Amino acid sequence: MRTQVGIVGAGPAGLMLSHLLHRHGIDSVVLESRSRDHVEHRVRAGVLEQGSVDLLCRTGLGERLLREGLRHEGIELRFAGESHRVPMTELTGRAITVYGQQEVVKDLIAARLAAGGTILFEADVVRLDGLDSSSPVVRYRRDGREEELRCDFVAGCDGFHGVSRGAVPEGVLTSYERAYPFAWLGVLAAAAPAVQELVYAHHDRGFALYSMRSPEISRLYLQVAPDEDLAAWPDARIWAELRARLETVPGWSLTEGPVLEKSLTPMRSFVVEPMQWERLFLAGDAVHIVPPTGAKGMNLALADVALLGDAFAAWYGHGRTDLLAGYSTTALRRVWRAQHFSWWMTSMLHRLAHDDPYEAKLQTATLRYAATSRAYATSLAENYVGCPRSDHLGPAPAEAQPPTWPPRDTPCRPGAGGSDATTTQRRSTYS
Ligand SMILES: Cc1cc2nc3c(=O)[nH]c(=O)nc-3n(C[C@H](O)[C@H](O)[C@H](O)COP(=O)(O)OP(=O)(O)OC[C@H]3O[C@@H](n4cnc5c(N)ncnc54)[C@H](O)[C@@H]3O)c2cc1C
Image (cartoon, rainbow, N blue to C red):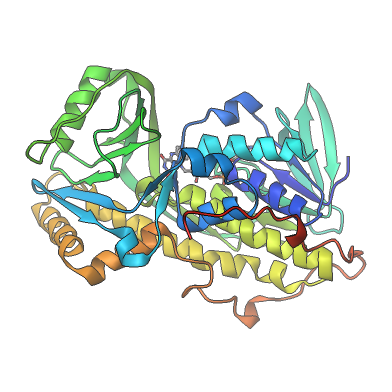
């Protein structure tokens, strides 16, 4: 099989890239190791930044999102028995939308298949070859047979445990990492949310987050030990702990309901630089992980491939190499902004050490500052709703654009770029 861009992984990054490329007239094939049913029902992130909503709406994927997504204009900080609202929209003019990652994935898969796109499920990529040639090969196993996909470029969108990052020769990549001494126990419950907006709760017993997926479904999180055993958390214990950490303001009580799913999410900060080697471009969790406190993971994945889609369009449409060459530098600016914000939210809200009352006092002081200073709250809000692409992130510097590739002998397909004519413009309530 041959295509222009071979994409490894059908998460938000890989599927969105395939969708964007299609709109630019560029052919791609997505290879995904799991089944369609599995990826469409994997409960993970659920908060879309304003820029992610705009991207989905601008590219014809807004219909269900605008109908079912829950627009939120603020979040609540709960600490020391007090409750404070951060009015994000009042402070920034932008908002977030609660819409499950699995719903984004379903919409993307439906759009790709409706457009005749190729997504091969249960195709396990085992090796990438020839990344430094003009015709890389993606080798994958499907139905017990080894197959190969030849392409011009490979997009490694296969998450933290994928194979793409490992295909880069030793010594090329530098990784930056931080592990946290806690994890999140996540619960999906059939319980109408008791709140209108997300509640971030700081408590002596540990952090808790109250969020929701729909008017009927709550999504709740508890800070737990990193090696926690899920079996030690029957439903009754989970609700008791949630009550202890969240029912801290007078007159407020939790709504309980059947637990539909429980999971443990490790907390990790991780970045690999650069996000490209020769003809391999890495995006999303394959190159960076954030602790979920700032709700940035899925948004970063979408922001990466928005850049990559434009860069491939410039290459195939106009023979331009600058955007592809500058991809890593440009993407890393947003990545590091999100890394800092996610680390900051995590450090402010979690119980960091058992016997450090000084640390706890600093956390309360920081939370109180966010609750009372418009300037500080604005900083929190603009990071939470997401920085626009052109904001202070700036363009890629000139020195970061070494045109080491594509090799001169690679034919460029002129005129394939530009898809404005096919753009379905929906009136967005978010602009
Ligand atoms: C367990 C978990 C829970 C999370 N919970 C939250 C949360 O509560 N809140 C939040 O904000 N963020 C959360 N995140 C983060 C967020 O979901 C991710 O940032 C987001 O999924 C990144 O999208 P992606 O497309 O880069 O990677 P992924 O969504 O991980 O997609 C990668 C895809 O590649 C496939 N793949 C892997 N290896 C191969 C291979 N060899 N061949 C073919 N395909 C392969 C995988 O099956 C997967 O479908 C969570 C992440 C994880 C892993």
